[in-house]
Amino acid sequence: MTPLPTLPPLLPRFNGQRQVRAAFTTRFEPIDNYEILLKMIDLGFRPEQEVQYMLDNGMMVVKLPEYGRSFEVALIEIRGGKKHVRP
Image 1 (cartoon, rainbow, N blue to C red):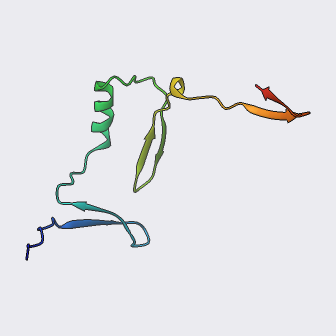
Image 2 (cartoon, rainbow, N blue to C red; image 1 turned 90 degrees about the horizontal axis):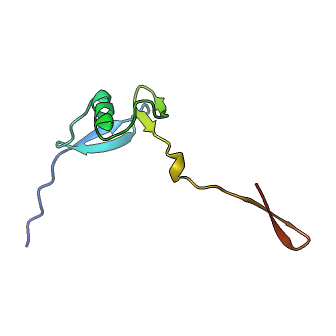
Image 3 (cartoon, rainbow, N blue to C red; image 1 turned 120 degrees about the vertical axis):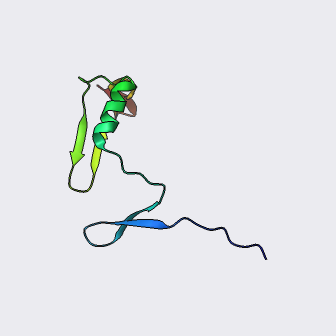
């Protein structure tokens, strides 16, 4: 028989209800959010760029909208069997 591979130990992370929220291997290294923000500036993000964020005791979510890469949605009405696009 072929022996089973040895798996690294897992480190569970729990939410407030003591349910497993994530599992990390011992290779996981926590990083300071400040380091991430500094790296973003190094990569060319502008300090004056719009930032949307959500922060609580357990998580930080950062979104950088790129409106130039978005698309528009047109409303289409059908009147009298013909399509009419509303701006």
